[in-house]
Length: 459
Image (cartoon, rainbow, N blue to C red; front, top):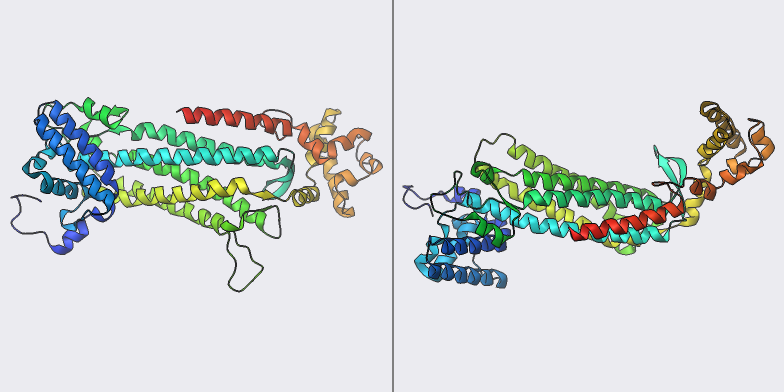
């Protein structure tokens, strides 16, 4: 493969150690697509003849057919996907196959392959995210009036609609989707034509290959083009943020499924039992997604560390960029596939949620707000409500269960209408503004969410 420069064969261990074909054959489709575009450009620019170009293109299609059929013989001796494809091409069409590499290097070739592959995977991720968000909108629309405790510090804070909580998940994922769409524009820049590091002496036309391969733009500095991997790091960063969100959702589902909460159930197909305890229904899928988030975070750290001290331009270190990226994409895709089916099929236990909301003095803030509206300074109102809660704890009663006389003992500004504000429904309905948990606001948020998804689909 190295021609006449070396006086001895590569050591067999070194050949195995430095080879990447065992994993970068994953790029075969994209490598061949890039080669077809390159051969087309070489022919149109008269760097090779049109006949040679057509012969190369037909040969590449035959190589692709062999790969698709599982009949391709991958060789570690040929080191990587590029040389394996080119060697087989030459076997099929003869010496003209050796002209394919005119005006390019494996450095710009692999950079192009990664971008083509990652562009496709980004589109797949966005499609899964849109499906997941659609499912959440459907779930939220069923539960705009289902009441559950909202938490801070994992302590009961205020009543919220379960639909409102689901819409919080939706907003997280909507930002994630936008991050991937935004990152895609930087992924979709073409390095092909940069050759090894300085460009080529042949009169190529990079706009031809750009259009053929569907790139938005052309990498404008050859040194940067062959050595840049920040687009992969950006993707992995967006993936890490998304996995962090999925992990937070998983944590809530795991807690809510416990006997101590009993808020929700997920379908049995996402759970397993115990080998010794027959009563168990373990939320394995959420637990695994929570764990896999750490794995994606690790791949981000790997890529950052890999790149942090590389001088321009290409270095062999960059062979190590693929496996972390592959694992990141596989882990993220698998997690999303599970969630696309699981999350929209959550079944909430409305009675359990309501009972839990009644136990935590969730309407205490509503009582304080009531007093403020009646002219009491907030800090004084805060103290009044604190005394009322203390009495409720002493008598094991919710604020709504205390008598009017008991409440009036703490303030003369408490009147008979106070109980309109101490009910769970009254608490929800009172928060009637954009972003609030009032059921009609949740319905409006769902409508806006549907419009957001339509815009994302159009991008």
